[in-house]
Length: 303
Image (tube, rainbow, N blue to C red; front, side, top):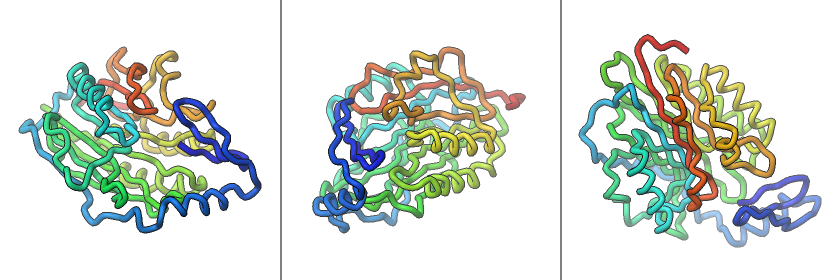
């Protein structure tokens, strides 16, 4: 992972920071250098909004136990170690919802993980022609969504010139006259604060129309205090609350240097079950750690 700070290019590799260059026009030099290795035609946008797979016939989720797993997997889902970690988590925690960011899907193998007995939707934001893979957001659930919507940023991240994507899905809750809206997102990186704010504002406009329970989860790239403040403003406007992790758990969440956490789970009109919020620090197949939480909902619940 690369970061720019005070004219320096810093690489994060195996939890070690390596200073690569120090020069006044670092962004210009890095763009020129990397363009030689990442040609403009390598990444292309897609026409299809989602790739979907139905595996479960359930029609409702038990509103008294809504288990969530959120994880930036750093495109490791074809890695044998990652697959072992992932299958073990599914077996142990049995989540109702899985929100993965930086998910990869090979062009010739859309039938990924046939053993995963869940319904899933994959929203790609680009195709990598060189590696013949899709990349994007992956949402799995024990029931089919009744609605889904994909939001792709109009602004692109620099160098590779790719957008960021969010997948919004809506589900029926058991014995309740309401629906649960879930949002799996990956916020834009390496751009100015205004472009970061534009993506959040667009999500805020869509989410504000939903009146029932809501889960907003993913990698928010809040690696600076200013980004964290902008996110907090949007969350407050939407009347959302953050899942609170115990102090020793919170320290395990992915950060950059001394930054705020990058990964979050927010919610509204549901309750977090006591002691359910966990960060799985023993999982090392991605540089991000999986986040877990369990919620409950009753039709008399108020925020």
